[in-house]
Length: 224
Image 1: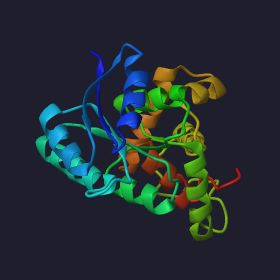
Image 2: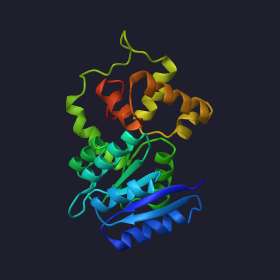
Image 3: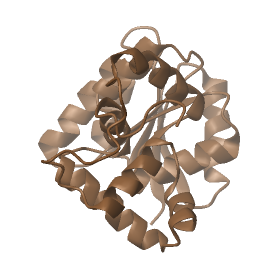
């Protein structure tokens, strides 16, 4: 079945461009559009899309508030609506705000079409995406608060196996499942299983939280 996508942006030309890019793939279907956060909430409840492409800076109700309302409502309903946030402004407060609200991805609007399509596919498949430029800024912001020495050895209560820790390190570097599989000489399905066990054992929601955990615990550090 095609992945259903709801487009949210206050600029009609931007929505038209996104629609053209996504529907050209043949397996991503734009089922609705919204021009502000309030319209987005109403459309998400009516259409139940798989993915919402959400502009975070809009007049009226912004994308951060709309993301929170959509994800909380969907969680109560037991339905998984994945929000991928987009903005022209790579400002930290927007990134952290929309991720706290429940988004599972963050891209800049000037991302190449192929990157946009890939990001929608990843979040629709249950993954999470943060564009590398934004991730680098976040890591620089977190760096002063990280442990002084990298924790290269597992702590006593670490539930992960050696292989799972290695997969987590590579996830924290921003590697895809395919890149990790090639590096470790494993199948992508095996890597996906390792990632799933890491998230389950550590009680994490997605790859974004896994990255945060890896840096907060000193498993990896910026510049590794």
